[in-house]
Image (cartoon, rainbow, N blue to C red):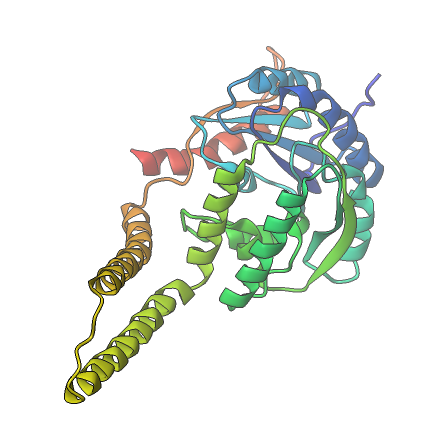
Length: 348
């Protein structure tokens, strides 16, 4: 039987977990997260499960768990917004002094909450998990991840640690700073690095996925990489300029060589080489236009100032039918409803 507990105080810990098509994992997830939180914070925590437009029975499973435990709340987004915006939606609803973020697939062990909190209490505002081993991942996935972090590290000014994800423990003031950033194309781990404060790594071995298949295929990984680069670097723009200068210098050298051959009384042969050069130059121009277009398109989308996410429903245990105004669960729902009103008004 679950021990009695009170909601008279705000939770000390908020756990945020984005969920997308994770029906097969949710029971095991809750069964591991709840004891891990109780071992450190007793009953003073909340678990926010953010359903990112799942197509399976994830939302029904979330509602079932929320009905059983008042510490669990389900947040249902109006459609699939993507992992980073689902995470952002959860971060906007937290009430705890500490915020613990992990994925729903149980590759990041929730039992590390205690050791990570002990490290944070040494004076750190962010303790991020840094993978020393990746169980259950293909060589291709490990190779592309390593390449991504090396590329990102060479292109951005912000120090974004390698081999990290969104698995981390943060203080409330870090989360408040993240929530104050209005940008639409969000790369949360990079934004956390940008915020600053004292941060440290927590090495751990990443487990294999508990069940099901990854919801982060190559297409989504590439999109995340583009978001990371364009959000934190202007190197692609400078690269386009440098590429133009290189080809310009090459063209001038080629023109000089043609002139020298002509002065010697000869002619430069090779229409095929000229056609190939034109194709190369055309391709480079299109690539440069594409880079500029990517940045311009993002500026256009940011200028619209549409809400980052739209919440369709919030599910948690409701107050008893004869509950009074002093009922703590009712106060929680009223508080959460007030928080939800701001993005809804912005969408009108």
